[in-house]
Length: 231
Image: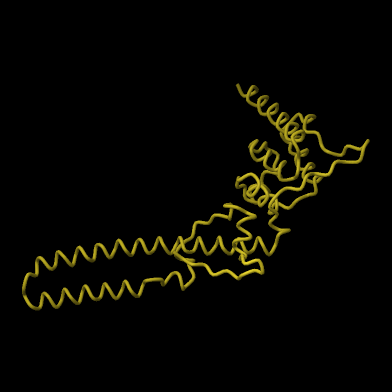
């Protein structure tokens, strides 16, 4: 197992530990490929495997040269090479997992170094002054496009948080993963996104229960109207 060395802090902890306590298990997942492995990982164990393979071939040649028990030895060496092939596959998978650990460690350190870009929790939305209500009301929306206009305006009203920051807060506070590109596509389109995405965005923008209910009720009304019209 890889022993990651992290720079120590004054309190005896390290960057990875501190950031892990802030972000939990929600480091960005990846699907590593051997083709993009660093050289130190890609070559891990390769020379050792090649040496073992050469030793098996040389032993086979020497035994056949003696002319004794060649069939039994051939079978034994073939089995050894089969086992060696299995070891090679295990090592390949281990290299992929090592890259994943490496990526997650780097991601934790990036979050620690850029707390404004990777916020952990939502900041409650600040209400308007008494007598002034600029918060959009999706309850007046008669079409999905009008609903999405209200949804976009709500994001602006709540502080216009970036899509990358929305992704980070949703992941860390709700344990859900909506990529920044998914959030951008949803919020710039005119089709109703999934209710789960709407609720996640409202929470990340600091909206409370009243705002959740307001957007959820309007979403249900429009969705049910669309389904009834299609029947």
